[in-house]
Length: 457
Image (cartoon, rainbow, N blue to C red):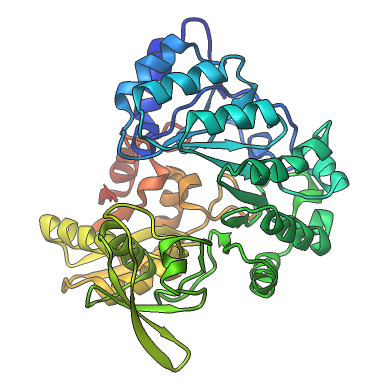
């Protein structure tokens, strides 16, 4: 793991852009963290992972990055979508100056801050309120002091837990999240945390499914059935909180545009939509998937939505401006535009057979998308790739390496008969803007060693 030190400006800006953070509108400010989570993924990284740790950045460095921010999208602080390790943003000694600079540069752009809540006091919340258009993403993990202290090493867990009530009292909109770890703190702790966040006014609650690498401590490991049990448990919990409750990544095996939840007071709520409704059409056009339906509602001004609820079907109108959020909460399945891009790539290469290498978590949904949306005559086979580099329970596309893809292709069924696919389709989440994986290996090595053309999607 590298660390950017000294005068960071050039290296900081380059890393920010090249690793895709600009595309996600993320503004890294520091890698410093003031808690020590037992589940911290960075402590489980195998040798060779190319991620960077940055010192608290200067205002000059922030100014270098701001021109790459899209003012039409929320500025995200404290999230990690690049290969820069994100810490707790509120530990930065100049965080108020940074946020004021962002607000001055983008007066009407929402600011999204992810925090563990340990440094949220009345003065900070009041400052965020006065800054305007700020939404907090509160990573609580446990609403019990013993659970919070055990999971995060928080020296003052009570204050962190009370931050949810502070946000509610000041009326600062926020979303709650937690890593679901019932095998460490029990199912009751999981339920109590969800209910607490709902009672304290969280607009939505996200439960992240746990994972561990081959280097994880034995206490962090769990059986294959745990994720399914968490998913089932969440289904039962949904009736105990008014806040939309979702699991990420979602364990779904269909493309039905089911509404997972509706934010209170939103256009969707005012239009009478509910969790469990199935969107049949948007502005008269059939809804093809969750992602496609959500995107069309988002882009439309006052869209007319047809939904089915049980045996009944009815239409309603959402009063909203184009591009404004509707308040719908939906799981992510597949965007038909991805399948359309696969079709264009196949036509460009003129192949009759291609293999889409996918993560184990996404394989079923991608296969459904290919069956429903691919209009090409060429055959595209979906092949889930086992993550051997990280090992353990890791199954996300963003953590696959070129060597993982190579090993999967070596076991490809057609290899024994001498048949090879004409094209390899690779998940874009596994690569940076230069086509390098987390170990710095280029996808071109896959092409060279396997003698098959590859495309990143």
